[in-house]
Length: 227
Image (cartoon, rainbow, N blue to C red):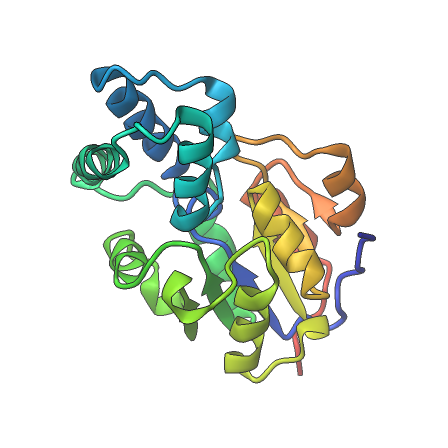
């Protein structure tokens, strides 16, 4: 993989959701850790981090492989989902700078989409609870694709639904699987890490690796909006 330059002008921005705009990955990891511990199946930090940004089908495969066929996966997901929902009941937290970058793009007239591995309707509900749903013309969820991240299909579908060529888009991601998906789609992909630091491979493949969404806003200020 090699880095793609930012398009000039940028005609659309496609965001990942959890860990990129919504500060939910830590709550998800905590729910998994607490549930595994309570069930007598403690999980290592390495396993928990390896599941970040991965869709549930793949997580099921990983858990079966790592925990064994006796692992009570249905109970695990029922209990961990309950903990995660309870953690979000007080409000869906945003990543720092999320509203800033979305407002900047909205004022610049740049269309926005979501490409997430979260299922519908939970993705839309989470965005609405966070007060962000109205920013997006398109929300592509796990339900909408046959091949989720790290496959490029979610990003290609989002670009298609917006009527924008992928080469004119920017993807914003926090996870390794998400960056690989954006890059494979031929999109200039910017990584804003959350729980996972970038690997050397992703440092080379990503258009940029930035410390925050504030830094992303500053970078995009230098790029003209579409006519």
